[in-house]
Image 1 (tube, helix red, strand yellow):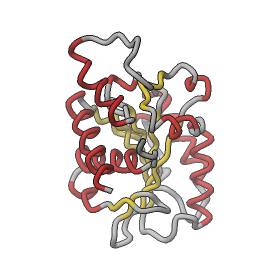
Image 2: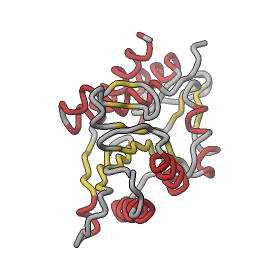
Image 3: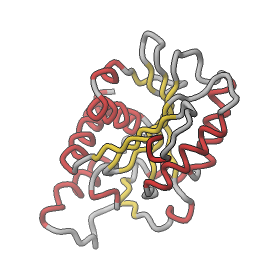
Length: 217
C-alpha cells in the first residue's frame, strides 16, 4: 500500500489556485515551510485543513467496495477513490479515501487552526516572503456569513502583528473563498471575500491532476 503524504492536497491547492485565480499561481512549487512557494520569494502559502471533531465519526472511510450501494453513474468515481486512496473533490466530499484519512483525523477546528497558523507566521516559522497566504481545506460547509466572520476573526488576530497573512483561501468541494486579510475597513462584510464556484467537472480534473503528480514523485 502506498504511504499517505500531504502532497496530494498541496498539489490540489496549487492546481485550484492556478485554475481559478490565474497564471500567477502556476509558478508555485511544493516544498515546505510554507508548503507552496514562489521561487522568487514573492509569495509563500501554508496549506492546512480544518474539521469539527464531531464530523470525524460521521464521515465514511472507504476501505472496500463490499456493501456500498452506488448509482451506475457514480461507480467510476467511487472506483477511483478506492483504487487511489484519495477522495477529495469526488462524490461531493461524502467519502474519505483510506490514505487521506490521517489528514482529516488530525484536523483542528477552523478557529483553532487559524490561531495556530497566525502565531507561526508571526514568529518567522515560514521564512521570509514578500506576502503570505493561508490555504485551508474545510470539511464543514460554510455559509457566506460564517466566511465573513472567520475573515474578520483572522484580521483581528493579526491586526497588530509585523508579519501576517494578506490572504486566506477557504477551500470546499464546490467553492473557493478568497478572503482579504489586509484588515481594511470593509463597509460591507461580504466585500472582505470573493466566492468562486467550482464545477463537478473541475473537481474531477483537479483530483486526477493531483493524483498523477503524486504518482510521479
